[in-house]
Length: 279
Image (tube, rainbow, N blue to C red; front, side):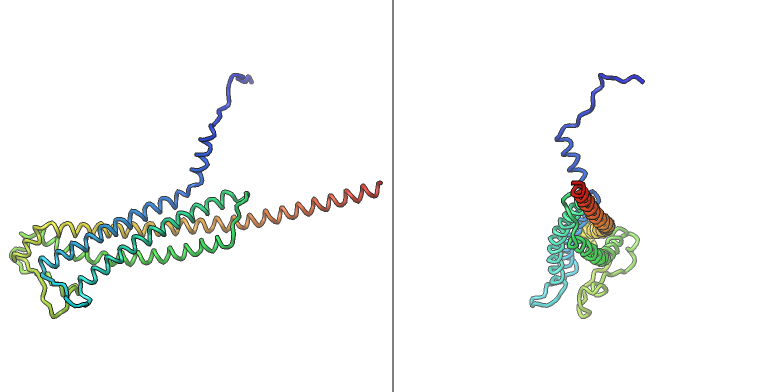
C-alpha cells in the first residue's frame, strides 16, 4: 500500500478544544427542564396576576360586588392573597431552578471527573436524594395548582360561550349567579341574566375575553411546570443512579490501588531481602 507523505494531520486549535470541553460538561437535560420550568412559571404568574386583576374589574363593573369596608375575608381579599402567593411562587421557583441547574453541573462533573481529583462524597448523594424528594413534592403541588386553575377557566368558559352564542339564548332566561361559585355569601344576590343591559355590556367588553384567555394561558403555564417537574424527576433519578454506580466504581478503584500498592511493597521488601542475603 502506498502512503501519502504529503498529507497533514488536522490540528484542532486550543480555544476550540476548551469550547468543546465546556460544552461537554453542560447538563443539557437539566437545562431543558429549567427553561421549561421558567417558561411555565412566568406564564402562570404573569397571566394569572393579570387575570385576577381582570376578575376584580368584572366583579365590580358588571356584578356590582363591593369591597367590604372592614377586614373581612371577602373575594377581593382572597384575590389580593393569591397575588402575593404568585409573587412568592415566582421568586421561589426562580431560585429552585438555579439550584437544580447547579446540582446538574456538579453531578455531571462528578461523573466525568471520577478518576480525577474530584470525589463523590456522601453529602453529595444526600443532596441528590433530597432534591428528588423535594421535586416530587413540588410536582404534586403543581398538579394541585393546575386543578385549581381549571376552575376559573371552566367558569369563564361558560360565560364566554354564552356570550358567543347570544342569538341561541335570546329567548331563554339564563343567569350567572355568583352564589353558585361561592364567590359571595348566600344572602347576597349578585347575578347577571341574559337579555339584560349588563349582560350585553359584559359580552361586548374586552375584559371578559382577555381575562378568559389569560386564565387559559395560566393553566397552560401550570401544565408546563408539571411537565418540567416530571422532567426534573427523571433527570435527578438518572443522576442518582449514575452517581451510585460511580461511587461503587470509585470504591473499587481505591481498593484496587491499595492492593497494587501492597503488592508493590511486598515485592520491594522481598527484593531487598534477597539482595541482603546475596551480599
